[in-house]
Image 1 (spheres, helix red, strand yellow):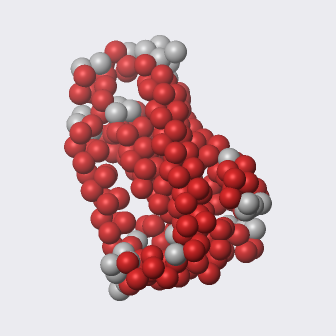
Image 2: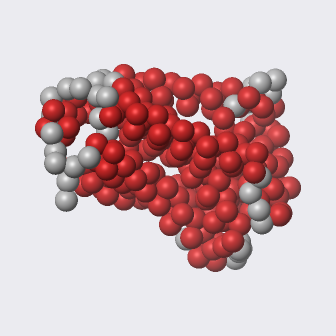
Image 3: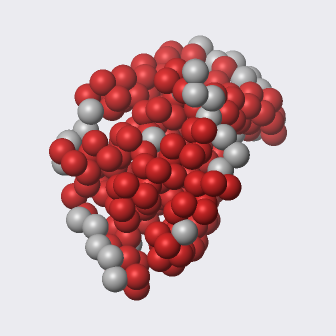
Length: 253
């Protein structure tokens, strides 16, 4: 088992544990949330958060779980995981001085990069699906339930966003030799995107509009993805991966 693969395996386990811990806490808090919606709305410091509390209250346990699990847990911790799993793919090897050995391996560059991309991508998205599958079981502790189908579709939409962040970081790594610089730039970008989501006038240009409570409410109501929110993310990831192959094919130590 290669060092990179071990890192992805253990990283995925850690990512799942954090996500599941957040999920357990959120679901166990649901009865208190339901009883104190008005108080929580009054405590919200900005209008966007007040509106979000309203939506969670109106949508019931499904909206609450989507907001806590996907919008809060996956969007925040998930983007961090996506950046961490991708930033050292090539840049880390260059930084450690081992890139020449990687390029000298008796395997095609395309295969080496594809294996690394797939390994990291699975580490990003598998914990999202596995944790989502535990939701119906966890809801049983608070006498609630949710169907599995919409949860899997919501996981697919969320995974598309996380893969877009992962793919952008992966491409950056193929062209750089400074993993810390990559991490700083990508995390700054995602924090900025999350920040503008909270500003009412510019929220619609935030990347996180593609994975907010309204998006998951639509999935729950229709049992379908919104193509204009899902397909551009997939197209971006494919484009970034192809570009990464092009950049890596011309990479020198």
